Length: 94
Image (cartoon, rainbow, N blue to C red):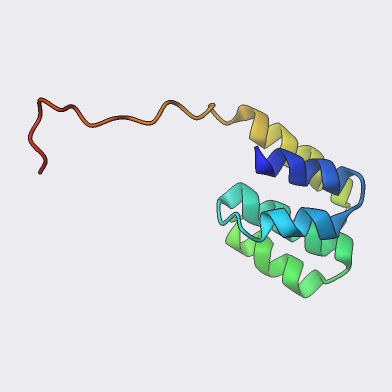
């Protein structure tokens, strides 16, 4: 999963590699990771924007490691993606 790769880069402080991944992920978790990227970069205005897009409050402590840990915990709680549903050939299309 691309987000897991981005998180690995974030944990190593390599926000540039993480940014190249999360800038293409418009999910809530992707936006949250994007906000963390900009926290690490030091661009707090942009970080706030991405936290808002993720529906997350901007952290007062601005501790990226706490946010990364919370992101990982949330990601682990997500149900795994199921198989893509194929249309039933016996049913007429709407």
